[in-house]
Amino acid sequence: MTNAPSTQATDPAASAGPSTLVMSETAVELEAELELQAAAVQHTTNIPSSDGIEIGPRRRMRAARVDDQFNILGAAAAGLAIAVLLFGWFGPLSGYVGFVIVAFIAFIGFYALLVSLKSDWQEVKDRVMSVVLSSAGVLLFGALVFVVAYTLVRGQEALPHLNFFTDSMELAGPLDGLELGGIVHAILGTLMQITMALIVTVPLGILTALFLNEVGGKFARFVRTISDAMTALPSIVAGLFVYSAIIVLITHQRSGFAASMAITVMMLPIVIRASDIVLRLVAGNLREAAYALGSTRWRTVWHVVLPTARPGLATAVILGTARGIGETSPVLLTSGVTAVVNLNPFEGPMISLPLQVFDFVKSPEPNMIARGFGAAAVLILLVLALFAIARLIGGKGPGDLSRAQQQRVVAASGRDLKRITVAADRRFQLEAELAASPDSSSPTVPPLDPRTKETSS
Image 1 (cartoon, rainbow, N blue to C red):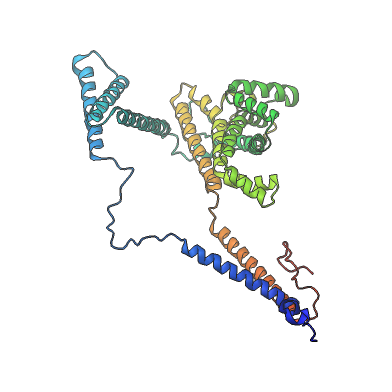
Image 2: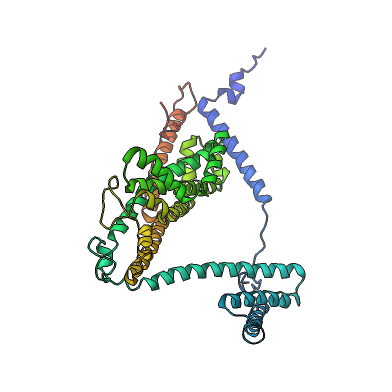
């Protein structure tokens, strides 16, 4: 009677060691992955070749057709002709404003008539509204150019004098020429007041907007309602509030600090409202992706939400600065009028550029009026400079890196690659040692530590 063969001799899987088991499992997984790749290749869509296919000229989507150009030019000529006939020959009409209004209305009517000759009613409405909106943009830009140009032209008598930017009005009177006196005290006062107002407004306004968007709740709805209502607050009310709360109760004198607090009251609702709208536009998928990676709420806000909304937040600060830097009535109540340089914002009057313009132009003397328009031109140039600085700070969109930032990102990627390569080599070495060791009781490899990317002991 022959003995039955033992299980250990007939079963190769049972006679194999732990390393053989690991290698067989890896081979099976590799074979399954290759089968999946082959199936994916079979079901891949074949894109036909574009060789030999003639490509036509690129279509310009924003360009106007010849018919549109003819309609616009013809309607403009007809509108001008109708206005000339009514104002020059047939009608007893006069005035440049009326001439422009009549010509524009006639232009719109003739343009709609010309478009309707070859188009349906829906296209006629679309073309007419496009012309109306474009005209509104041109009108707005023209008004802006007119204001800036008129101010610069009227102030050209005072702007060429160097003393206008380096001297104060301490030793100059209304009857003195433009070679005496200047507005340096008003420039410094405006810069100091708007700086103190921005120090309070920017963090408080952005944090409030983050509270409204990231926290929410009933109290957030109440805060949003109050901030919306404060956007229509008259500036004189803000000046009276600061005068009663700070000057009457605390300081007992007008100062630049009180004026900056009045400006803050006017700027804060603008910054809150604009920042709130910008933060709402941040896609929720970005927040969800950060939360999925294990980030906390405020880490997500700091590294995801704020960098994404940075250009919009810079615009919000610009809007608030434009509102605060041109305020006159609250500054008149809280800072007072002075002709000397005051560098202490907590003591004594401190005049600003808008208040200095008001003080200059109310004088009947031509030199004082010229100084007033020169101060207004300096105020406009100062606002444009602040806008340019804000755009440099927040003008880049999310993901737009400077050259230094790109170099730091490349260096960090190199360090990560080196660390991962070392950890992979260490893991392969441990696998080889386990495979070569027949007495090993554990065929598994220690897992990677997610913090160091190295095998844990």
